[in-house]
Length: 110
Length: 117
Image (cartoon, rainbow over the protein chains, first blue to last red):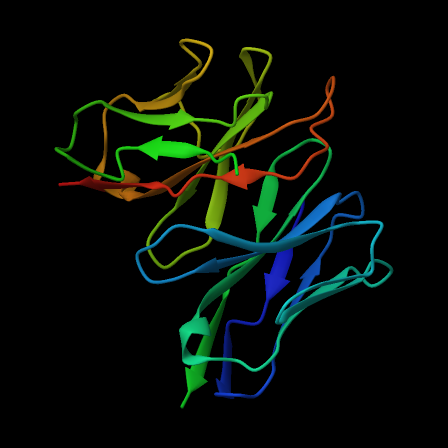
């Protein structure tokens, strides 16, 4: 079945760039998403990329997609303490349902 | 911007009671989903719904769960006899598309936190 994997923890200093990586197995993935979740809160869609794109930039966020390697990354430039949260990678196919990774806990140190 | 709305945001129920979680998907969407996130764990797919029937369900979605689209706007998840392990955040999602292909991005609601005591 589909599988999405992420590293569990990332720690960076305020002002540095953060790069969160994700790999997935389903070659028929149509959309790939990054969500942010703060403690006790819901899922905040940060950005998504369609599978025929290889890069998408939105202000401090850059998503890179390597479809051949089934690798997705999220780069956060100038990381702030408010960026501390859990970041989930997810993929969906034309069948519709989304498959999520385990989440990467990003800790930003002042 | 259109959004998926869920009510209530938090529900506390006694073990064995029935609960109904409500969702209003985006109005022109045709595909609806429920997901569950147990505290500290990943988001897990429960069920997808299209054309007034379940199109796919996971092994978590057993006989105590049911879904319904009772009118043109609501999409509900019913848990018949809640257990302690049903305590989780439940997310509703929807997306658009044509025919059998739900080929637009999915939008998630903010979730309902269910606490079973």
